[in-house]
Amino acid sequence: MRPLRDSDPAATGPYRLLAELGRGGMGRVLLGAAPDGRLVAVKQVHARFAADDAFRARFRREVDASRKVSGAYTAAVMDADADAATPWLASVFVSGPSLGAAVEASGPLPEETVRCLAAGLATALIEIHRVGLVHRDLKPDNVLLAEDGVRVIDFGIARAVEAGDATELTQTGLVVGSPAFMSPEQAEGGELTPASDVFSLGSVLALAVTGRSPFAGTSTLQTLFNLVHAEPDLGAVPQGALRRAVEWCLAKDPAARPTPERLLGLLGPVVAGAAGGRLPAVRRMIEAQRAEIDRLLAGPDRTAAPLSTDSPQSPQSPQSPRNPQRPQPPVWLRKQAAADAVPPTAPPTAPYTQVVATESGRRPRRPAVLALAGVLAVAVVGGGAYWLTNGDASAGGSGVPDKYTKSPVCEEVAARLPLPAADRRKDKDVHDERPEEAKTDCEWRGAPYVVDGKSYEPQDPHALVAWDLKRSTESKGNATKIQREDFSGTDKGETRETGVGVGDAAFWRAHWYRENCSLVVRDGNLVVQVVLYGDEHPPARCQADAKEIARAAVAAMPG
Image 1 (cartoon, rainbow, N blue to C red):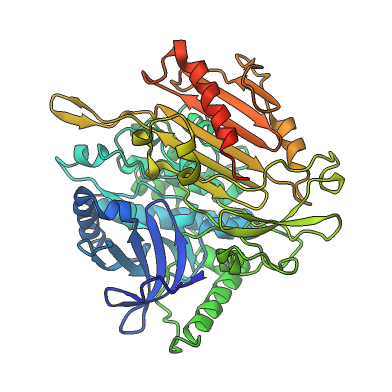
Image 2 (cartoon, helix red, strand yellow; image 1 turned 180 degrees about the vertical axis):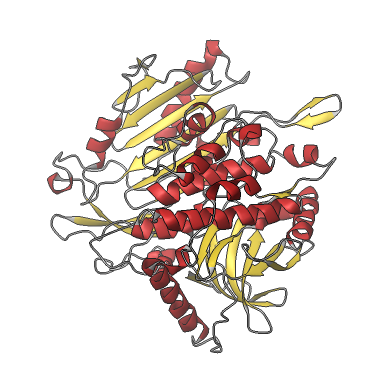
């Protein structure tokens, strides 16, 4: 929860704004107060969408449909304005952590709790689908654990699926979702139906009971490949009704998945009071959140007001992982003064992290507080300050210092790559920032093409450049050593490359997803991957293009 800056508006519509809760690929979420004192979550869309009249029309339709959804298992939509200079939507604020935050803080949830969670989510989907909506981004961070049960949030990015309108909605080129929790058809850019949400539900339940996504890969592309081609990893899901429900939801064929109604029948009766909000760890998170909001409301520039008991909603903000050795601070304390990139004067007692933009499905993780043994350095990265080791023997024994500490941001490095600026897709930018590592994905996609008078977006980008930066920490070890040990090039079909001209090692990845070539380069604690597709990079020229782009991608790293 970030205090508002002087440049932030004081109000949106009739709602007084109090703090920023989080940011995502579609916009940002702010905590607001209604004239009657109720707390609301106000979602403002990014300016690039505000300038699109077609987006405003879709947004208006989504809001109209969302108002019809019962608030029993959702954060009910209260108000919206699609015609404002910055379109916004206000929903009931749900007091409670996201499922992702709860799992990160305390580990996998008990099986009976997850069965209760499954029943609540299935009931929410019944209501959402009843009004003609497909959520499109059902993930742990969009599932809130309130005291009285689960809530599904973020209808601001749901797309109305109406007869005769689906083609328009799916040809906008905007793919909404988080890779680890997408359906296979979403990963391939296909048509989405209510069955797509059911697949996402299966992935969410698997994470809740095991602590990890059943399709998680070492990269976004690997995760997408797993979604489409690999069987889910369900070895840790307990046998029984819950296991059968998850397996059924994760069928590759949408027609083979259950409806939410049939899923409820398979789960059977659940134990009353087993909702996640009753777990001691979740209750502590709820209490801490309320205390923080009360302090905010009682601040020097605010009038103290009681927290409405029916005013719940939680941010889509970065979440915190489990650290069993230390008490867990509230989830909103992970970023404070670091917003101004001011290094702390002493080792921090609360971790910081900032996500510039992410739709990758990877939640930012909280570092363990570093021991003072060894030399520590403060790195200012992506707008946040982090305590890092200097990569010496105390951090893994390799003695190799980190060559890079600052992570790239697409907006800053893309212009330095030999790729057409007109093809850059800023809405696809991914930047996932953690103290121990950072991942950045930038995408270039060709112009829409016309068939029979209709415009279509290319199914694949023609270029994708990804940076994977690891940083040495006391808990994780030396970053260069980790990258060297993880760096492959020995799998079937992969071939070493010695002519790139930069980095310590490189290899060509075996083809597996329609690309013409895929080059991976390691330079110290950095790994860069260049993936090229389509007629823009034909096979005869692909490898030469990839080498040139890789050299520029390494050279573009922040100093």
